[in-house]
Image 1: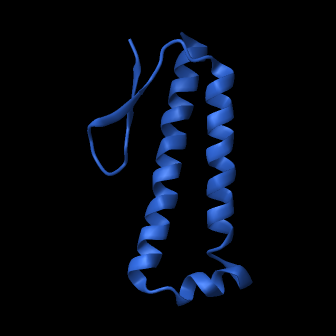
Image 2: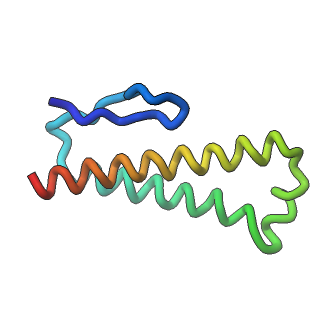
Length: 87
């Protein structure tokens, strides 16, 4: 049985992780998404955040929504990784 992954914009699973995927592939995807989120968030505070704060509110909201979606995917990947390690 495949592990359901939910897309944050919907409560329904959008895609499934193949049960045959190994833990290293999950770790690689989790690490990649973590680095991407870190890069995105680095542009929202301090001197780098000036450009972000000048965006219109809708673009700021959409930008942070993208960050949230990455964080939710990371949560799902972490749960899948823990499930494989404990099972």
